[in-house]
Image (cartoon, rainbow, N blue to C red; front, side, top):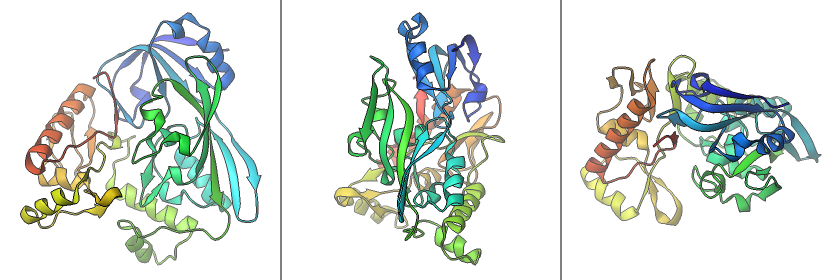
Length: 341
């Protein structure tokens, strides 16, 4: 039985802790619930926002439509061989808890993605990634419901059109497709450990631990906790901007004026530049403006110290983007989904 509420506060449903309200709100626990909701006039007459963990969005105003909270739960072992396992995971499962589940069972491939906030259903939308690993590397299929006609559909990895923090669900199918579950294939033996990115290898050495599913997960958790604020303490959505990619020519020109500018090879001989470094060079790191600001340990993270509005966060992000554009001629793109602008 579905229950539709009106004028619901969304403050506890977004990790920024922004006070906004949904005109209508419905929590669903199955595809059956969603199909029942789709037959209601409130669904037919309103715009929709599908909400997972609320860890990658910013409300700049109230949402004058229907918020659908995905609470589908369950992990189903679909196939298992000597070296691989295939799991179908419901979209409402908490991502970090799923990672810990895999580490505990000896399933490899997502240990580098420990402590990323959000749900399993949100993972393919954003193509989440960290420490040299992206979730598209282990996704086989994404399953769900077409919100236009109620049909069940399944997308192969290739059909998801994954890119850097991109997928078909973030653009072409945005708010048109409800992800109900994700199928992933992980390793059981001969795990391929990726410890070359960032401070991961140094942290493992400091812990005096050889690479393993558990030690890599522990190291990632330690690094993330040391650099990123806990959303339950300080409102934030993690990295606010994507790391921009620029041409090699552009990068070489910047090197002449900024000799220490970091850069990493990307596709088509382009160079990926850390957005946090660019923001820090523009003097934003640790700056506070009343209730909002830029985190003191990681310039890529915008924070709500309490009582801040989504519009204040958005305006701060706009000022940061403008300063980076002026200093480096680089355009920053938000990684966070901005609702209301």
